[in-house]
Length: 152
Length: 152
Length: 152
Length: 152
Image (tube, rainbow over all chains, first blue to last red; front, side, top):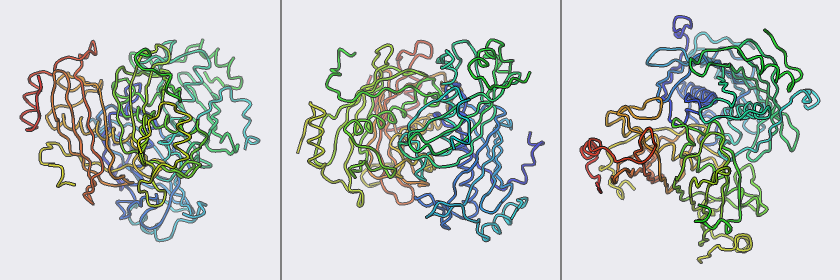
């Protein structure tokens, strides 16, 4: 499956291990937990660009993001203690939103586990209304994530 | 927003209240929690058709379902203690899968919160391979959920 | 076990049903989830006394509480979809803290599931330092929870 | 606080970072999440002794453990993204149970966050009844965790 997706275009690679309480009544990682993983991957993406999270949920450059859309296709279950690799890239940037793309593989077997995407909106920290992504951020992403498409 | 969606075609209505630990670092219900709510709604749908869950994850008629796809569009945040209504219907049935559709509203303000859908696959409890939805189940759904489309 | 504990002295009774994602890798309700249940029960206790939660975590009378101690003894596992009853009382009140006591039973079988307690501290919403429980609150608790002991 | 507790007697040190969805309505790590951390620490303890977890919840030596008691004292809140260190030791071993002790510190500030303990019971994987801890395991723990007390 690594042959199907070109993982070389994903700038961020996060490794996590399935935790005991993330496995559900069907003995597999609960379907909702993948969205926790995607959130960790998106935060990790920004950290690898040099920003950190403030306790109030904004990043160190003052930006605040809300999730507008989430989706996930599940290909193979993940089990207790599995080591997973999450590859993350930004597919495109629009005026005030970013579209993240995630691929999850089993680190040990290389099996393809899931594919997800999420639309994140830059909001004004006071009004919470959508506001344009700053040019500085777009420039930094284009340098960090070479295949990103900018629609604006 | 209740004027936009015809909620009268949704046979299942589940009321839940936002729990303290479902609110996250941004003081809103975490985006992943909506998929917990959708799962509760799907289980509730089958319960309202007369089936219960066994401790091993199968239903009382022996059927086992895996989630193949999940998605959610977020329109307004939900906050601590908010009372929410989740409307659920099955949009269509294919050979071995069902497509659930969910709408979430704030019960107090009637504000539209989120729209989601999920594809659930009927799997053989032993092999875990996809297997056709039994005719009996399709017949029961058509009687319970009048606008369902059957593609097979 | 209902014969062992005098549940008649517990003023608050909360019914919950075990959710699919609360069951863990051992097919039982994860041990940490009981503390979620206790938190729901403590919030329910205050609601039944007429107070609600604000989105910022304070109650409608402006009080803010932090958890200082938690404990749980597990007697029998709880399983997927089990209906549980949580009985809650306040055992004692000290200067700035309250000691809650919780008993959990399986609603269907009456089996005793767990016993827990939690020390909650009233803190100043600005400084977050412990501050005395207001006399008004103590008076209300004594009227609502007849066997509470007040040490001050 | 590192001066108060002798952390040199704790054989297992696990580092974790607070995740976005572990922070609750009060902007601190939810009180129940500490028990998730303790569970991760206990599993890590056994891994560092050379055992792994099977998908069914038993360890690679076939042993199965249930939690009989949990407790936690909270000293300072942990916040979004904080890096935490969890020190873990076994305080004592009885016939069929072990008593784990955990200390949590903020890795950056060295602030003492919480102290916990948990009683874990060795159960027969078939009957789920308590069964004596095997001598082999006790011998291995005594070699790994020098200050453990054995009461049997």
